[in-house]
Length: 169
Image (cartoon, rainbow, N blue to C red; front, side, top):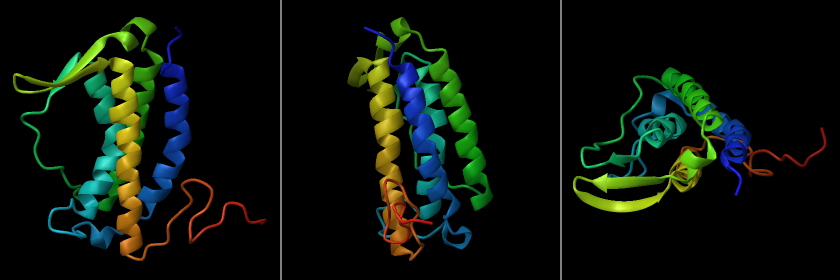
């Protein structure tokens, strides 16, 4: 079986453009806004989306992660931190994927909470589920937050109610 890391790196590249377009539209004056008391703030969510590629690359370099000490998602001090955080994380994730050989990709990676194992999967499965799918999930949440704030949504796939990627120029 061949190493799927290059395909994941290509997917990361392809998806990063849509993520950038969304993060560019995060209003600097609304970072503390929440759609519900149980929700993350807009700043927390946008920063989380920006941090996922780099955080997941750091986690995937290890044999597992203990989440028992995980706290609340951090907020950026300002909106100007969001895009540089994304760019640094993307560079780190690409570097990690470029160096990931097939043997390491297939090695078991564990998520624990203290002494309790939550799951154990091949490292490449962690990259699929926690780096990529998790990123898309929170990016989708971000589109809802922006829509609720009446921010015009950019194209993610195809078109949005605000932009038509199929229209002729």
